[in-house]
Image 1 (cartoon, one colour):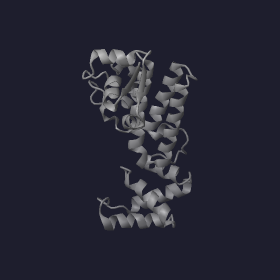
Image 2: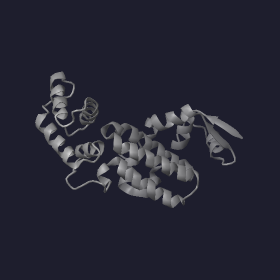
Image 3: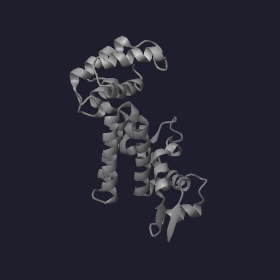
Image 4: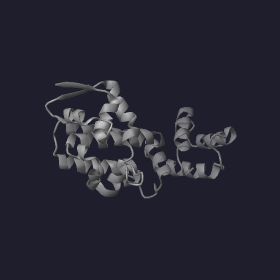
Length: 231
């Protein structure tokens, strides 16, 4: 039997939500049935996954937080109706990870674009059944760690020791000297409450332009700088 599910029904199934009737849960879980979702529904599931974001009874930790803290043991925090189905476990983790990547992308576009590609590759490999489930879990845990905190990546020089420096380094073609010089200039220039203050923002942007004469590059880096908590 073919079933066409909307976004909410699919999320309720993945989360074991009591609003989904037991009969419908059984029908969806039946592997002899073909589950269909519209492209819009799939996009909504990936991008609008707020309903799947927080795992109850764990002090409001997200699923990705739990995976980073506990590794594969975090799967035990999922509802039993999901744990019993490896594909449901995988999609639940992937949906949460996709949302986190989308949320964090403005802080470091180059880095999170790369994380998105890695997630796509991992999803495709899983769907093609080209790797064992245990290997998939190991890789998705590692990717979750890298998405949650870019310092988990071993690709940075020792001097690139903060999230803001990593963002500059990644988005300045890994130019170490330029990233460090720009970081120093921004810290020396920025004033308290500079975000949203037209004159103070202009001062920061002009400081960036002393290192990046291109208007397009200066504007691009300025938006990244604005998204950094430490500036």
